[in-house]
Image (cartoon, rainbow, N blue to C red; front, side):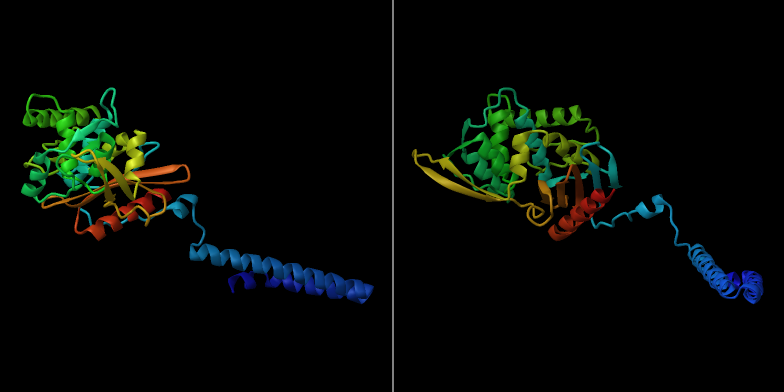
Length: 328
Protein backbone atom coordinates (compact mmCIF):
# COMPACT_ATOMS: atom_id res chain seq x y z
CA UNK A 1 0.00 0.00 0.00
CA UNK A 2 2.94 2.34 0.73
CA UNK A 3 4.08 1.95 -2.88
CA UNK A 4 0.62 2.89 -4.21
CA UNK A 5 0.43 5.97 -1.95
CA UNK A 6 3.82 7.19 -3.14
CA UNK A 7 2.69 7.42 -6.76
CA UNK A 8 -0.70 9.09 -6.07
CA UNK A 9 0.58 12.63 -6.83
CA UNK A 10 2.07 11.39 -10.08
CA UNK A 11 -1.30 9.89 -11.07
CA UNK A 12 -3.10 13.18 -10.36
CA UNK A 13 -0.60 15.15 -12.42
CA UNK A 14 -0.88 12.80 -15.42
CA UNK A 15 -4.67 12.85 -15.34
CA UNK A 16 -4.91 16.64 -15.13
CA UNK A 17 -2.40 17.16 -17.92
CA UNK A 18 -4.02 14.57 -20.12
CA UNK A 19 -7.49 16.08 -19.65
CA UNK A 20 -6.06 19.49 -20.50
CA UNK A 21 -4.66 18.08 -23.71
CA UNK A 22 -8.00 16.43 -24.44
CA UNK A 23 -9.79 19.74 -24.41
CA UNK A 24 -7.49 21.15 -27.05
CA UNK A 25 -6.48 18.13 -29.09
CA UNK A 26 -9.30 15.64 -28.67
CA UNK A 27 -8.42 11.98 -29.23
CA UNK A 28 -4.70 12.58 -28.93
CA UNK A 29 -5.12 13.60 -25.30
CA UNK A 30 -7.04 10.42 -24.49
CA UNK A 31 -4.27 8.39 -26.07
CA UNK A 32 -1.67 10.17 -23.91
CA UNK A 33 -3.78 9.45 -20.83
CA UNK A 34 -4.01 5.74 -21.54
CA UNK A 35 -0.28 5.38 -22.20
CA UNK A 36 0.63 7.28 -19.05
CA UNK A 37 -1.71 5.33 -16.78
CA UNK A 38 -0.48 1.99 -18.20
CA UNK A 39 3.16 2.94 -17.59
CA UNK A 40 2.30 4.07 -14.09
CA UNK A 41 0.61 0.75 -13.31
CA UNK A 42 3.63 -1.22 -14.54
CA UNK A 43 5.99 0.85 -12.39
CA UNK A 44 3.69 0.34 -9.41
CA UNK A 45 3.62 -3.43 -9.93
CA UNK A 46 7.40 -3.63 -10.18
CA UNK A 47 7.82 -1.57 -7.03
CA UNK A 48 5.33 -3.69 -5.07
CA UNK A 49 6.88 -6.99 -6.23
CA UNK A 50 10.42 -5.86 -5.46
CA UNK A 51 9.39 -4.67 -2.03
CA UNK A 52 7.68 -7.97 -1.25
CA UNK A 53 10.69 -10.03 -2.31
CA UNK A 54 13.10 -7.96 -0.26
CA UNK A 55 10.87 -7.94 2.81
CA UNK A 56 10.43 -11.73 2.62
CA UNK A 57 14.17 -12.33 2.30
CA UNK A 58 13.74 -14.53 -0.77
CA UNK A 59 16.85 -13.29 -2.50
CA UNK A 60 19.83 -15.49 -1.52
CA UNK A 61 23.49 -15.49 -2.30
CA UNK A 62 25.02 -18.32 -4.40
CA UNK A 63 26.74 -19.68 -1.28
CA UNK A 64 23.42 -19.89 0.57
CA UNK A 65 21.74 -21.63 -2.34
CA UNK A 66 24.53 -24.21 -2.56
CA UNK A 67 24.52 -25.11 1.14
CA UNK A 68 23.93 -28.85 1.73
CA UNK A 69 22.93 -30.01 5.22
CA UNK A 70 25.42 -32.42 6.79
CA UNK A 71 24.10 -35.97 7.18
CA UNK A 72 23.30 -37.62 10.49
CA UNK A 73 24.62 -41.19 10.79
CA UNK A 74 24.16 -43.94 13.37
CA UNK A 75 27.79 -45.09 13.17
CA UNK A 76 30.10 -43.76 15.86
CA UNK A 77 32.70 -42.88 13.26
CA UNK A 78 32.43 -41.83 9.63
CA UNK A 79 34.42 -40.22 6.86
CA UNK A 80 34.05 -39.54 3.15
CA UNK A 81 36.34 -37.83 0.67
CA UNK A 82 36.68 -37.03 -3.01
CA UNK A 83 38.90 -39.87 -4.24
CA UNK A 84 40.26 -37.80 -7.11
CA UNK A 85 41.39 -34.80 -5.06
CA UNK A 86 41.65 -36.26 -1.57
CA UNK A 87 39.44 -33.45 -0.26
CA UNK A 88 37.58 -34.24 2.96
CA UNK A 89 33.83 -33.97 2.43
CA UNK A 90 32.55 -35.16 5.82
CA UNK A 91 33.94 -36.46 9.08
CA UNK A 92 32.50 -37.74 12.35
CA UNK A 93 35.10 -38.82 14.92
CA UNK A 94 37.21 -39.41 11.81
CA UNK A 95 40.46 -39.81 13.75
CA UNK A 96 39.17 -41.89 16.66
CA UNK A 97 40.61 -45.40 16.86
CA UNK A 98 38.09 -48.21 16.54
CA UNK A 99 38.09 -51.94 15.87
CA UNK A 100 37.97 -52.64 12.14
CA UNK A 101 36.55 -56.15 11.83
CA UNK A 102 36.91 -57.67 8.39
CA UNK A 103 37.63 -54.33 6.72
CA UNK A 104 41.16 -55.37 7.76
CA UNK A 105 41.10 -57.66 4.74
CA UNK A 106 41.51 -54.64 2.48
CA UNK A 107 45.05 -54.41 3.83
CA UNK A 108 45.54 -58.17 3.45
CA UNK A 109 44.69 -57.85 -0.25
CA UNK A 110 46.76 -54.69 -0.62
CA UNK A 111 49.88 -56.44 0.73
CA UNK A 112 49.40 -59.38 -1.64
CA UNK A 113 48.84 -57.21 -4.72
CA UNK A 114 52.00 -55.22 -3.99
CA UNK A 115 54.21 -58.32 -4.02
CA UNK A 116 56.98 -58.13 -6.63
CA UNK A 117 56.50 -60.42 -9.63
CA UNK A 118 53.09 -61.46 -8.37
CA UNK A 119 51.59 -64.43 -10.21
CA UNK A 120 47.83 -64.36 -9.66
CA UNK A 121 47.50 -67.79 -11.24
CA UNK A 122 49.94 -69.47 -8.86
CA UNK A 123 48.20 -72.30 -7.00
CA UNK A 124 47.94 -72.71 -3.27
CA UNK A 125 46.98 -76.00 -1.61
CA UNK A 126 44.31 -75.59 1.07
CA UNK A 127 45.63 -76.79 4.44
CA UNK A 128 43.66 -78.29 7.32
CA UNK A 129 44.96 -75.50 9.55
CA UNK A 130 42.86 -73.02 7.60
CA UNK A 131 39.58 -74.87 8.18
CA UNK A 132 40.51 -75.58 11.81
CA UNK A 133 41.00 -71.85 12.30
CA UNK A 134 37.49 -71.16 10.96
CA UNK A 135 35.95 -73.67 13.35
CA UNK A 136 37.94 -72.45 16.37
CA UNK A 137 36.96 -68.82 15.81
CA UNK A 138 33.47 -69.28 14.37
CA UNK A 139 34.76 -67.10 11.56
CA UNK A 140 33.32 -66.14 8.19
CA UNK A 141 34.46 -68.58 5.53
CA UNK A 142 35.03 -69.04 1.81
CA UNK A 143 34.35 -72.75 2.49
CA UNK A 144 37.73 -73.82 1.15
CA UNK A 145 38.14 -77.60 1.08
CA UNK A 146 41.30 -79.20 2.40
CA UNK A 147 43.49 -80.53 -0.40
CA UNK A 148 41.95 -78.35 -3.13
CA UNK A 149 44.30 -76.20 -5.18
CA UNK A 150 43.16 -72.63 -5.63
CA UNK A 151 44.87 -69.75 -7.36
CA UNK A 152 45.98 -66.55 -5.64
CA UNK A 153 43.35 -64.70 -7.67
CA UNK A 154 40.64 -67.07 -6.43
CA UNK A 155 41.84 -66.61 -2.85
CA UNK A 156 41.46 -62.85 -3.28
CA UNK A 157 37.87 -63.35 -4.44
CA UNK A 158 37.27 -65.67 -1.48
CA UNK A 159 38.81 -63.06 0.81
CA UNK A 160 36.84 -60.02 -0.40
CA UNK A 161 33.42 -61.38 -1.41
CA UNK A 162 32.32 -63.87 1.29
CA UNK A 163 34.96 -62.39 3.65
CA UNK A 164 36.71 -65.72 4.00
CA UNK A 165 39.06 -65.87 6.97
CA UNK A 166 40.32 -69.18 5.60
CA UNK A 167 41.31 -67.38 2.39
CA UNK A 168 43.05 -64.69 4.47
CA UNK A 169 44.98 -67.38 6.36
CA UNK A 170 46.01 -69.06 3.11
CA UNK A 171 47.30 -65.77 1.68
CA UNK A 172 49.23 -64.93 4.84
CA UNK A 173 50.77 -68.41 4.80
CA UNK A 174 51.65 -68.05 1.13
CA UNK A 175 53.18 -64.57 1.20
CA UNK A 176 54.78 -64.48 4.64
CA UNK A 177 58.38 -65.54 5.17
CA UNK A 178 59.64 -68.23 7.52
CA UNK A 179 60.24 -71.93 8.03
CA UNK A 180 56.98 -72.53 9.91
CA UNK A 181 53.39 -71.46 9.35
CA UNK A 182 53.40 -69.42 12.55
CA UNK A 183 56.51 -67.53 11.42
CA UNK A 184 55.05 -66.91 7.98
CA UNK A 185 51.84 -65.53 9.44
CA UNK A 186 53.78 -63.29 11.82
CA UNK A 187 55.89 -62.08 8.90
CA UNK A 188 52.82 -61.29 6.83
CA UNK A 189 51.21 -59.29 9.63
CA UNK A 190 54.49 -57.40 9.88
CA UNK A 191 54.16 -56.56 6.19
CA UNK A 192 50.65 -55.30 6.84
CA UNK A 193 51.86 -52.85 9.47
CA UNK A 194 54.81 -51.76 7.34
CA UNK A 195 52.44 -51.07 4.46
CA UNK A 196 50.09 -49.14 6.73
CA UNK A 197 52.93 -46.93 7.94
CA UNK A 198 54.08 -46.31 4.38
CA UNK A 199 50.59 -45.02 3.61
CA UNK A 200 50.72 -42.60 6.53
CA UNK A 201 48.37 -44.67 8.67
CA UNK A 202 50.03 -43.65 11.92
CA UNK A 203 46.86 -44.07 13.96
CA UNK A 204 46.38 -47.72 12.94
CA UNK A 205 47.73 -51.11 13.98
CA UNK A 206 46.96 -54.65 12.88
CA UNK A 207 47.59 -57.84 14.81
CA UNK A 208 45.76 -60.28 12.53
CA UNK A 209 45.40 -61.07 8.84
CA UNK A 210 41.58 -60.99 8.94
CA UNK A 211 40.41 -58.60 11.65
CA UNK A 212 39.90 -61.20 14.37
CA UNK A 213 42.16 -59.18 16.61
CA UNK A 214 43.99 -59.95 19.80
CA UNK A 215 43.28 -56.58 21.38
CA UNK A 216 45.47 -54.49 19.12
CA UNK A 217 43.70 -54.36 15.78
CA UNK A 218 42.40 -50.86 15.11
CA UNK A 219 42.24 -47.96 12.69
CA UNK A 220 40.20 -44.80 12.06
CA UNK A 221 37.59 -43.88 9.46
CA UNK A 222 40.02 -41.49 7.80
CA UNK A 223 42.91 -43.97 7.63
CA UNK A 224 40.81 -46.91 6.43
CA UNK A 225 39.56 -44.64 3.67
CA UNK A 226 43.15 -43.78 2.80
CA UNK A 227 43.97 -47.51 2.68
CA UNK A 228 41.00 -48.27 0.43
CA UNK A 229 41.94 -45.42 -1.89
CA UNK A 230 45.41 -46.92 -2.23
CA UNK A 231 44.05 -50.43 -2.84
CA UNK A 232 41.67 -49.15 -5.52
CA UNK A 233 44.68 -48.16 -7.62
CA UNK A 234 45.18 -51.87 -8.38
CA UNK A 235 42.97 -52.94 -11.29
CA UNK A 236 42.60 -56.47 -9.94
CA UNK A 237 41.37 -55.12 -6.61
CA UNK A 238 38.82 -52.86 -8.33
CA UNK A 239 37.57 -55.77 -10.42
CA UNK A 240 37.12 -58.00 -7.38
CA UNK A 241 35.42 -55.57 -5.00
CA UNK A 242 32.79 -54.48 -7.51
CA UNK A 243 31.82 -58.10 -8.25
CA UNK A 244 28.43 -59.09 -6.80
CA UNK A 245 29.01 -62.83 -7.16
CA UNK A 246 31.36 -65.26 -8.83
CA UNK A 247 31.65 -68.94 -9.67
CA UNK A 248 35.22 -70.24 -9.62
CA UNK A 249 36.53 -73.56 -10.92
CA UNK A 250 39.10 -75.08 -8.55
CA UNK A 251 41.22 -78.22 -8.76
CA UNK A 252 40.45 -80.98 -6.27
CA UNK A 253 42.93 -83.14 -4.38
CA UNK A 254 42.23 -86.06 -6.73
CA UNK A 255 42.93 -83.97 -9.83
CA UNK A 256 39.33 -83.31 -10.75
CA UNK A 257 37.55 -80.00 -10.30
CA UNK A 258 34.69 -78.39 -8.46
CA UNK A 259 33.00 -74.97 -8.59
CA UNK A 260 33.04 -72.54 -5.70
CA UNK A 261 30.29 -69.90 -5.63
CA UNK A 262 30.80 -66.72 -3.62
CA UNK A 263 28.45 -63.77 -3.10
CA UNK A 264 29.59 -60.33 -2.01
CA UNK A 265 28.54 -59.27 1.50
CA UNK A 266 28.45 -55.62 0.35
CA UNK A 267 24.77 -54.77 -0.16
CA UNK A 268 25.61 -51.46 -1.82
CA UNK A 269 26.38 -53.29 -5.04
CA UNK A 270 23.22 -53.29 -7.11
CA UNK A 271 21.31 -51.06 -4.68
CA UNK A 272 23.23 -47.80 -4.92
CA UNK A 273 23.82 -46.16 -8.28
CA UNK A 274 27.52 -46.12 -9.10
CA UNK A 275 28.65 -48.33 -6.19
CA UNK A 276 32.03 -49.97 -6.89
CA UNK A 277 32.99 -51.51 -3.53
CA UNK A 278 34.60 -51.95 -1.11
CA UNK A 279 34.37 -54.17 2.02
CA UNK A 280 32.10 -54.97 4.95
CA UNK A 281 33.25 -55.76 8.47
CA UNK A 282 31.73 -56.88 11.74
CA UNK A 283 32.66 -58.30 15.11
CA UNK A 284 31.99 -58.11 18.87
CA UNK A 285 34.06 -54.92 19.24
CA UNK A 286 33.81 -53.62 15.69
CA UNK A 287 30.01 -53.97 15.56
CA UNK A 288 29.11 -53.17 11.92
CA UNK A 289 31.56 -51.46 9.57
CA UNK A 290 31.69 -50.63 5.89
CA UNK A 291 34.30 -49.16 3.59
CA UNK A 292 32.51 -47.88 0.50
CA UNK A 293 33.08 -46.22 -2.85
CA UNK A 294 30.95 -45.06 -5.76
CA UNK A 295 31.49 -43.29 -9.06
CA UNK A 296 29.06 -41.01 -10.85
CA UNK A 297 30.26 -39.27 -13.97
CA UNK A 298 33.84 -38.20 -13.40
CA UNK A 299 33.57 -38.08 -9.60
CA UNK A 300 34.39 -40.90 -7.18
CA UNK A 301 33.65 -40.64 -3.49
CA UNK A 302 35.17 -43.09 -1.01
CA UNK A 303 34.73 -43.45 2.72
CA UNK A 304 34.22 -45.50 5.85
CA UNK A 305 31.69 -46.00 8.63
CA UNK A 306 32.83 -47.74 11.82
CA UNK A 307 30.80 -49.08 14.75
CA UNK A 308 27.32 -48.81 13.33
CA UNK A 309 24.50 -50.63 15.10
CA UNK A 310 23.37 -53.09 12.43
CA UNK A 311 24.04 -54.29 8.91
CA UNK A 312 21.09 -52.25 7.63
CA UNK A 313 22.26 -49.11 9.41
CA UNK A 314 25.83 -49.33 8.15
CA UNK A 315 24.49 -49.52 4.60
CA UNK A 316 22.11 -46.61 5.22
CA UNK A 317 24.95 -44.60 6.79
CA UNK A 318 27.18 -45.22 3.77
CA UNK A 319 24.42 -44.16 1.36
CA UNK A 320 23.90 -40.92 3.28
CA UNK A 321 27.59 -40.11 3.17
CA UNK A 322 27.85 -40.86 -0.54
CA UNK A 323 24.73 -38.81 -1.31
CA UNK A 324 26.27 -35.93 0.61
CA UNK A 325 29.63 -36.41 -1.06
CA UNK A 326 28.18 -36.22 -4.56
CA UNK A 327 26.36 -32.97 -3.70
CA UNK A 328 29.48 -31.27 -2.33
